[in-house]
Length: 74
Image (cartoon, rainbow, N blue to C red; front, side):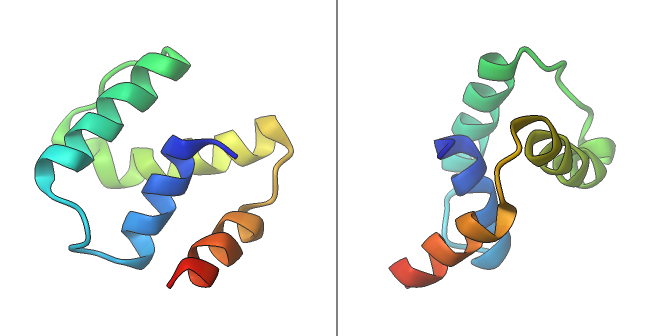
């Protein structure tokens, strides 16, 4: 499993769990890892959803597996 994707989904399921610094660090690491251009703040919400969908399309992984893993940790 991709740790950056897991982090993003965990953040979506549990808003407020991570500090702004943790969110920024994960974002920087994920963008660097996947060589994706930085986005403006106005595009962030759309881009996160788009990026996640693209990841699952390209990787063939199942998003529900990530959600199940996070729910099992709760």
